[in-house]
Image 1 (cartoon, rainbow, N blue to C red):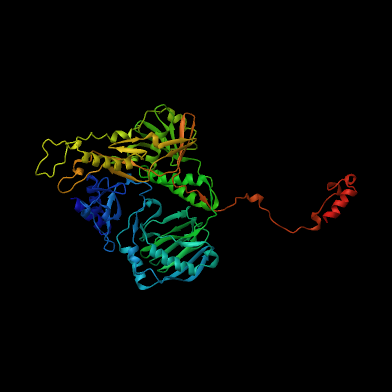
Image 2 (cartoon, rainbow, N blue to C red):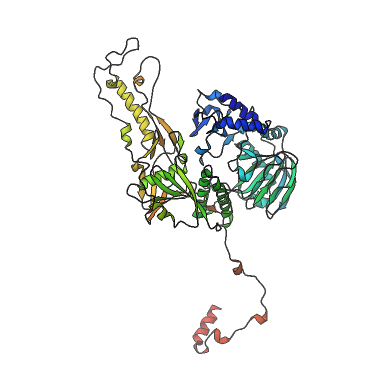
Length: 617
């Protein structure tokens, strides 16, 4: 039955099924409550859709447990190393929203000889080109549409069509060389490369438009890299009303196959399907070295809110429009400064265990009570932001949530005082996971083999076994002891010593991995000391590499502020009020009116002043 659900999914995805058949299939999926088959990237995965696992993704097959790997479909003959998995949308977080596929091998022998010709400036900062390229490269690009890797985007309500995201350094390198030869010289100042992450978009006639929006610029603070231009490479040609509309700039109604459009990312734009066929295009950006960027913390805060609300929109779809608005405001702010937003903004009131709190993705408010420590507030903030798994359930799915829209934050302290409760992430002494070994007994020797038996043998007193036990413990300690948060079965606990409060900052001490820790076990032929050291339990060690969390205490509340992305960069800009901008004109004789008394007092002007004036001359 599960194999049938898997295979019919891909058959129906080809668009050959009637509406009635598709409805029957959805009903079967909703009635199937099978559990996960494996875990990849922290996500539970199934090889077929179920009532819980409905979002399809593609992962490298060798990352799936070998025991179940063959059950997962390989829908792409050109990329047989990719397996289709189904995930629970409630488990997604910013780490797993996007599914970036490695497709460099497709261009191993084809990414050379690219040339952009026929440059035409269709608006200020917007250009069109024709892409000339060898036959193998053309075939490789045209073949992207037939890979069977398309999925609906997370924000499908605002962008229409289907897409997949892939990485190809070879394709980016070939385009980088072509761009460097084709762009006007002034635009090449600081140009570094074409971003190797591409979005392959497909629209059919009748699909919804890709709504008017601004592209969020790429930024790498460590390298001083920022994107300035969007690149659209149309793999198919067609016409639309218009196909691409750059607000205040060009409106392109006809597109030829392998047309490349470059435009300044300050342009708001909208895309429409072709009237007469399938529209397929790639989107990436030109990256420049720009070490002169400034920073505005409010932009970073708004971006953090946008990411958070994207995840929350899985639970509350009404938040999607707020997230889209935040992304657009951030994109504008990078170039023009942060403009005022709407009068009301969304907040999410949550209850996790015995703790009520309010969050918007950057600010997290908790009631200040004797039972709730700053370390616990920080732990809940992190588990919420990263949507950590507790047992088999995502953090956010364990919360009772409601969306509240308000004009300001003044209501929050009183709201939380009425709901102040207990604790949800208790402290835990991690040393309890590592009991001391037994003392060795001199005559407790290892049996030579299973044939000679173990009658009367106490392996826990064997010096060899104890040495192996201690070695295994040390390996586990190296993973568990630095972790600020542990997942013990269905419960989250914290180590208060890994949360250091200094001034108005909470420093989270730990490593940078999020993975289950397996207490060592050994197996092999015959007997060895490791045969007598087994796994007692597994512990989820949430090791996080995060910036400090800022906090304040006021009106009976802890107010935590967390910006993981630090996406606060801003290009140099200057704001002026229109009334203060001078309009220049030449002065005429009639403009000069003065009285000598306004400039000097005759009684005070003496010979000494006259001598000093002559010296200056």
